[in-house]
Image 1 (tube, each protein chain N blue to C red):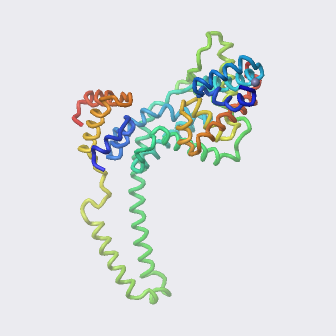
Image 2 (cartoon, helix red, strand yellow):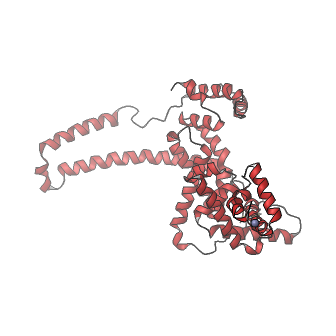
Length: 177
Length: 203
Ligand SMILES: [Zn+2]
């Protein structure tokens, strides 16, 4: 391997992602060529630097905050929906009874349309459970997924430990999920 | 596709968690947050250089993930999906404050808690000599400054690879570019970091 060839694989050499043969050839080159060896060590140093950067624990209450923000967002979406309905009705009202110049041109067709809209709207508004229902948790489906995952991954086809962990967590919580 | 066929594709706990979320199992989403919060939070901290912003943005990542989990495709990777949301939020944030961007962005060394005690940052304990620890903290600040002075595409590639331990393929998925581009971004980031931190690069 010459210097030009080495420079082409130096990035992966520093990243330690070369296959064994290529790494061996690169080792041989850096043993023989002090210039390339020095360049390689400089770049490898940047990797050590980033790896040495401190990590911090996520602040306490992080999950709770996330949950609260999700709840806020859901609430905002609901009130946003009612605001939209209200606004639509108001603008329709303005169209029908609003500015006098426009009243005649709107005509009976729009009045009929309005009647339909109001009727449909009131049916919706006064129907029981008109609020967007909370999504129903599909426990049967979840149980099937969990059980089948446990038995499928339990045979450990891809070295996946998740099935065991899943079984443990399920039996811990004492739920028959 | 029947249930059995669906399950046959499951290979990891992540896939189960996503399926449970899609069936409105809120506890599964909590598990996702618990699993990934540390990685996402630390990555964002190093991307934006502020722990306060990192806390807010990391929460944002999970709130957005919750909103979009129904559209999550099973062949995608949950981890890279979350890092992708995080990366986009960081870049947005950086762009918005781009005008007021300082040449040198100082990293917070420590934060006082309510009692006025400094919280330690769990710096690697090189030795018990105060001098050495000071040097180390200073070096950490310099590294962070250098990171903030490189383009965010290079910064994110380097952090995802060295700091978060993602593979080339995972990074390619996260930032939506070819694997070759990921490799060259990591390389260019190293070159920039080396040039900015010359005095600290020991050969
Ligand atoms: Zn050489």
